[in-house]
Length: 394
Image (cartoon, rainbow, N blue to C red):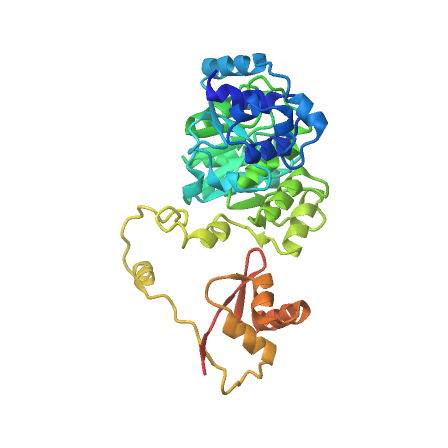
């Protein structure tokens, strides 16, 4: 029996959770070892109950055979957690899928600035316009746009990215051969041609309401950041934002009218520290230093040479940050503010890291940062990260 068949046996065995499968794969080198293990050995796996060990006595591989045949017929590739092509970015989340079904060509996510764009199905014309604009801008700027293929914001973001000729990936809550919603048939084909359709569910799996919150961890897990375009108070997009934060990803949101129900979630995210995104560069500038050869501001690539003011503007050196003398302390800075300025660098730092490095209580750190930001000595970046905006002299 091929090694891949053991993976399919394990993932399709009824009654096991993904966490149970991951625990088994931590204890045993491969699914093949799980398949042939005695019950007593299985019970040595941390967290495994006797009832779960009994489930593993089912050695029927009919489902695995069927899935292998379907994938071959549909040209769907299978990536396991132990394959070299499985993205490390996803592998390192708390609950990675044991395997992925991929139709198309999976981007090299570990080397890409991927941004998940999500939002409500019941969107407004404003939301659709913003999603298409931002999807286009992210793709034109060199990012991989990741989304679902749900109605509304997800589909609009992918359409915008495809119009820009960018690379895209869609994470599904059903099999990669199941088109949902039906009107997205052509969009499915376009995404598969320009990137990949991705699912942890085998071909033929119908859409199920329980699948979509679960697949959100893959959306954010493949990405550096999650962008919420439009989300009411109770929205699956907010679940994705929460999952992204748990995974250490950045979160951005598009602001909307304060009396618009579809924008309540986004406005609250911004209030609570998410980055405000009005165009793609609001997001991509955060990763420009990390991907200097891939990211660019939309409209600047291959631009023809220009004369006059615009040409001079491009060749002018980067402005030098103003200097602040700590010895003279003309600004009447407090000890906390001085300590924070000395600790901060030009690279954004989390407030939690500043609290740990300085030993200053949380309330005082946040208060001092607020004053420093008002005085233009510190700039705040997405995710409540702060950078020093001045040079220090003693």
